[in-house]
Image 1 (cartoon, rainbow, N blue to C red):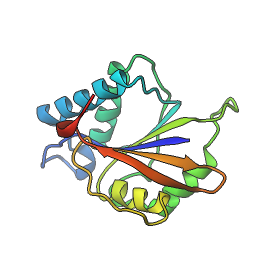
Image 2 (cartoon, one colour; image 1 turned 30 degrees about the vertical axis):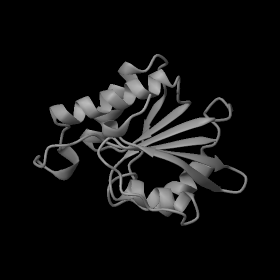
Image 3 (cartoon, rainbow, N blue to C red; image 1 turned 180 degrees about the vertical axis):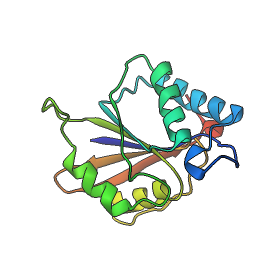
Image 4 (cartoon, one colour; image 1 turned 90 degrees about the horizontal axis):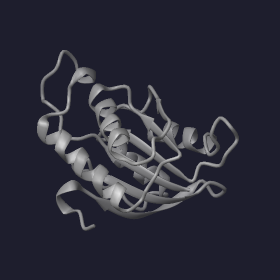
Length: 162
C-alpha cells in the first residue's frame, strides 16, 4: 500500500479553540500547490482519513476539489495533534480494504504536528521522525502483511519538483 501522510496547510494562530483554527490564505495556496503536484503525478487516493479539526477538513476539501478523481473521505476523531500514533497504526492495519471489500492501494491521512511526525516513526519502525512543514507530505511504502513501511520521500510546497 502507498500511504501518504499530510500535514494541513498554514493555519491562523487564533480561533475559538484549537479545533476551530482555519487555514490562512497562504495555507490554502500551500495546499493547492501540493494538490497540483499530486495531480501532475497522477496520484489518486482510494481512501482519505481526515482529522475533525477545521484546518485539516479545509485541507482535504481543497485536495478533493483540485484532484481529477474524487475520493472517499472519512473523518476520524483520533487523528488530532495529540492523537496516538500507535492507535492510528492499528487503525490503518484494520482498514486495508474499503467498505466494498476492495483492497486500498493508496491511503491519505490529513492531520497535524506532532502526530504526523510520530506516525511516520511508528509506521517505519522508528526509521525517522521528520518535522513536517505546513502542507508537507510523506510517502511510505507500507507492507500490510508485515505491518511496517519505508519512508520514500517527504515533500513540501516550497520544495516541489514536478
